[in-house]
Length: 347
Image (cartoon, rainbow, N blue to C red; front, side):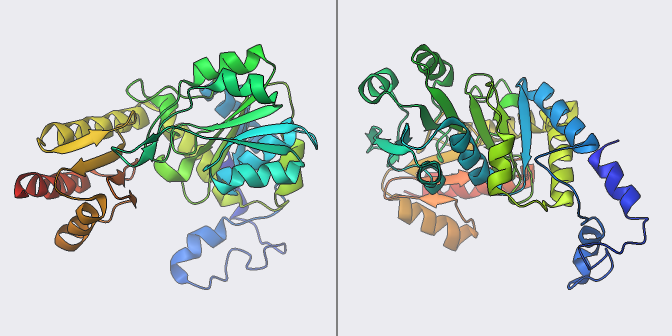
């Protein structure tokens, strides 16, 4: 029985349990269906029956030893992975400008945090991938290392190569793949870390159509992350959110879902090919990182917003990044294409 089936069955019960709204009282009527599915007594980190089966099925889809469903975002996955790998006093390598969860995880584990730097690409105002893994490991002898791949802007690391180096020195590799949840389902996107890193964390809500803050922790080593997850997470996770994770993965792995991803990639590729003066950069086609000669990134962002009501995800002094995902329709991309074509010819 699937998680969604359990929700439907539970909705037929006369509930005298927590949560006390009992699937009836709703502070906002449009949330009624959500409240009906909000039930208790589901321990996500000691999974039984439906949840256990759903996570086992997910692990099979991703080709890993275990997949944990997360209802507290990728942050909880990062923290759990570090707590699982590092004992107090052991060294943890993190990027100096990484997501705050990387350093916070090290602090919670009592690890000795060592920060590494990445090459800055002035032409685009972004950071490139790590290229001195072996040198860092030889110098610091860490217990674990966290890399971010892809970066916010869609720059992907050679995780397979980095993994081989880490294994050579007995270092646990944790990959923050929060922005790469679509990667395992398309050959036209960068290679996913799931089969190479010891732990890979993905955010379903960022690009893969999931609701905030659903995420996944993939475990490909012999350590048990469940204990760490129990330590940092609530014992009352959202059952509706767990069900959406199951549905989300099933969709991504379906022929319909994979076709959806390829259509998104094709539409973005067509958009790029229609422009002459606007430049693009990055490994991940779904992250539209652009710049235009004669305009700063901030000026480009301002023109998109003021003239076409298009709001970008991130802007720096050089470039602008527009984020796409499963929720990005062809119509939406056509409007962006129209706006960029106007700006392409404007100067």
